[in-house]
Image (cartoon, rainbow, N blue to C red; front, side, top):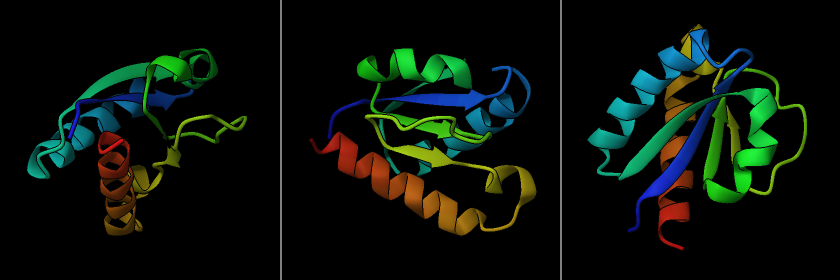
Amino acid sequence: MRKINVLVACGAGIATSTVVMSKLEELFKANNIDAELHQIKIAEAKSLQDSNDMLISTTILPTKYDIPAIRATAYLTGIGQDKLEKEIIDTAKEVASK
């Protein structure tokens, strides 16, 4: 599997995306997924999608993207976190195998 590039977004690119970044680093490491994470503002996602493989956001996705986009509010609420992590892992493995 190849290394994947993941955009991690929140409204300002500072607070909640920082929390999610650390959770994703642990998740990818525990599942042997080679990923490079890029912390951004959600407004930057559309222009950065061509050079990245997936988007994980803590905020509402304002548009459609050409890459898989996952809303990760479960990391903030704690509700549905297992389901979210399975979706992230499955999507990352699928993207990395292409």
